[in-house]
Image 1: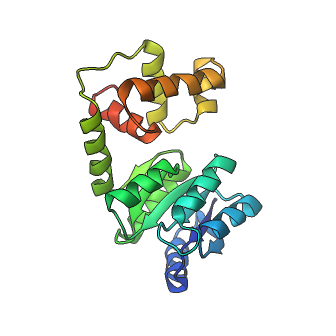
Image 2 (image 1 turned 120 degrees about the vertical axis):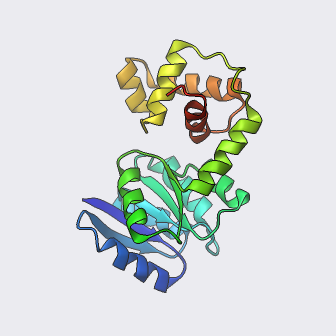
Length: 208
C-alpha cells in the first residue's frame, strides 16, 4: 500500500485528488495539508510514502514543504503536482529536492502511474519539465568535455536507477560519505546543480 499525503491550499482540489487516488486500490490517502508547513508536520507524524505537493500555496509554499521533508525525512518521496511549469517554479522544486514534477492537467491514469513510479524510487518529470532540465544541462555542459572515473560512472548509473546514497554505498561496498563526496566532485566537475541534472546528463550522453 502506498500511503499518500495531499498538499494543496484549495480544498475542492484536494477532494478531487482524493477521489482520483481512491480509484487505485494500492494507494491510500492518509492526510491532507493546506500548505507546505502543514505537509511537513503531517509527514513527521504520519511518515507517508509519497507527498503530492502543490508549489504555490500561501504562507509556506511547496518549496518550503519539500525542502523540510527531504531534509528531515529523506525516505519520503515528494511528487510536485501543480499547474505551473515556468522555469522559476521548476527550479525551486528541484533545488528543494523534489523527486518528481507533474502537472494537474495530466490524465488521472498518468497521475496514478507517477505516484507508483516515485514510490518505487523512480524520478518522474512531465515532458516539458524534462525538456527544460535537459536544456539547462546542455547549456552548462558540452557532452565531449567530461572525464568521469569508472567509480563515478557506476554512481551515475545507480542515481539513474533512483538509488539514494545509502543504497549506492551498499551496492558499491563503499562508505556513504565516500558516495556523498564523489557526487559533490561530479557536480563541480560537470558544472551541474543536483542529482536530477546528473541523471539527465547521464541519459543525454548515453552513459546509462
